Image (cartoon, rainbow over all chains, first blue to last red; front, side):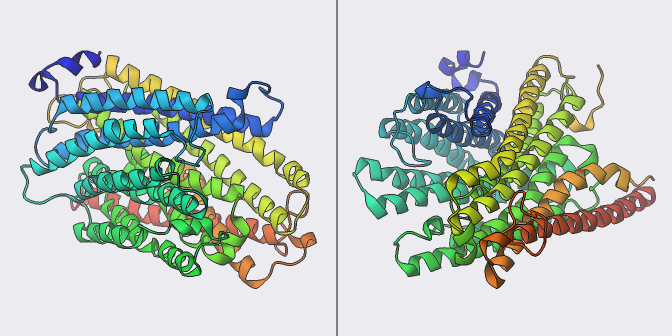
Length: 469
Length: 97
């Protein structure tokens, strides 16, 4: 239904259309991404399940899962929040709803094409940079550039004097991810090989997390928590400390992924120290949000968006404790290349960042559609299934990682390690399937919210209203 | 006003979200200590079916530290929530919040 606006005049397009397009696309890709994750986990738990067909092989499906979640769910949820938060914080309208709609349309088309090619085995062969270069160009020109133009122009046309911290992050992170993406994909274009290729690949792989996924997720919380609680942000200045310490410390920790590679030792040490310094922005962010909750902690158990947000902020604590120290040489020696790292990656993407984004998508869609959530019971079901599913996944993979680490260090026969970690692979599949189930319910709940949710009067927030059905 | 953050109201959130948060911190603390102070022979690494929760083994120590940190974080957060709940209830009844 939003497709009809693609060729409409910008002034005829209702405000928030692009945000709604991005929001439902993000939820759709989240269902696809977690469904693929559940499928892949089943293959690890039950190796005889679905064999003999190349395109269903783990090597094909893993890439599709990873990029469906990063480019589909997480990044589209970011775009969704940028389309409504940036103008709201600038007391203005989105610079171009039409550009936003085309952005969402091209994003869906480009991602579908890219994932289909990966599924068919057409890949650049580099982890996280798996898409082939023509698709990289589509991502740069059809996804990142229009998003950046819309956000930067909206900030430039703001009707407020200052720029709130959320918009600082939005504007800067889009610029940084464009640079990171362009540089990170370049080994394929310039035929770079060996250590250079490895370093540049992981410069992209780490920075897409450190300069895009985690800071934008944090920026979202700087908007949602004050909005939901009605409290002003505890400290804008601590927000600036968070922002500038990310910029200063977190642009070059990439070689901590390659501690055993023959990179220069000074580069690895430098990256490791920068990795520990992530604790500065992390503590600034967590403290700022938790202090903003002052006097409104009861919303943690009463309001589903706050529940999601604060859980995400709490999960940022172990995320950064692990992230800061697991990449030091002593611990990395043990956990590198094991399920521990898979667990940590999911703590970042499915734990901290996803919980913050889910809250912002719930809040934003209700605000834009002017509809109260269709079912609070289903939203709570979603919360508990995603949380319990994630916890089962994370705990089982962390312990499996320790088993694999021991197997690696003591040179235990590989098959013995496979047998030892089998129960944890089953637990991982159960947890992932719970997350997938919760997301299916979420998609239904948001679809019904758009169709049948109680209408929210102008000037009120959805979470302030009682259910009328 | 009623304390909305009683243990009954916050129990499940703390048990799941709080415990996991503590376990995450415990995981890296445990791994750091074991990597720093001693690795032992293979018989003492303590994986599945090998005294996995025996604190004298490598993995067993980390698993135990994760459980202790998880419990500690859940208790600390629970106490903090209960105190906040009491303050908020008092604040709402006196109109100061």
